[in-house]
Length: 294
Image: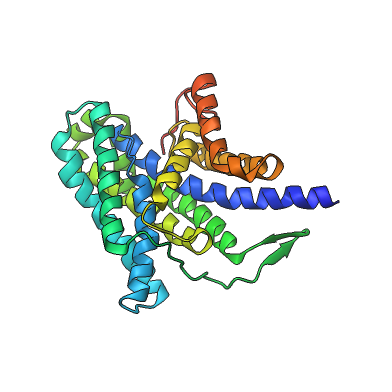
C-alpha cells in the first residue's frame, strides 16, 4: 500500500510538471509551425512572466490579478519587438542563423533581467494558499491544480482559436503553405508576428503559474526552456495534442526517475530522453504520417 501511495505521489508531481513543459513546448511549436524557426528565447519569456509579476506587485503595489495581466502584456510586447526587429529583417537567413539569433536574444533578455532585478531568487504568493490537499494518500498543493487547470484551458482555447476563428485558420494556412496563403490575401508577416505574440504570452503565463512553486530568478528560463523544447521534440514539433502528451510524458518520467533512482538526475532525465528520441525516432513519438500542426 505504501508503494502505491509513493507511486501515486510521483505521478501527481509528474503531471503537474508535465503541464508546464507542455505549455512551454506549445509556445515553441506555435512559432515553429508558422515560421520553421526554433525559438530558443522561449524560456526567457517564461522567466519574464514570473519576474514582471513580482516586480509589479512589489514596486508598484499593484493587486495580484492586474499584475498578472500587466506581466503578460509586457512579455507579449517584448515578443512582438523581438520578431519585428530581430527576425523579420532576416527573413531569408538560414535556419542555423535564425537559431543563433534566438540564442543571442535569450542571452540579451537574461542579461537585461539580471541588471534590473539582480541575481536573487524571488517568490510569488500561491494563488489559493499553501495547505496541501490529500488524494488517495498522496499530497498535492492547490497551485498544482492551477497549473493543470490553466494548461487544459489553454489547450481548449487554442483548439477553438485555430479551428473556428478566421485568424486562426489564416495562421494554419500560413503554416502549411505561406506562398499560397499570401496569394489568397493573407498577410503572412502579420501572421508570423501574431505567432510570436501568442508564444510569448503563453510562455509568460507558464512562468506566472509556476513561480509560486519553484520561485523565479533571471536565469530560471534556461532549464525550463530546454525542457519545453524536449516536450515539443517528443511530440513531433506539433502544436496539437502531441506536444501536450510529450510534456506529460516528460514530466512523468522525470518524476519517476527522481523518485526511484536519484533526485540528482532529475534534470538529466529530460536530456537523456531527448537524445534517445533523436536517435530512435527523430520525428517524435506522437507524429503521424502527416503531422497535424494545429
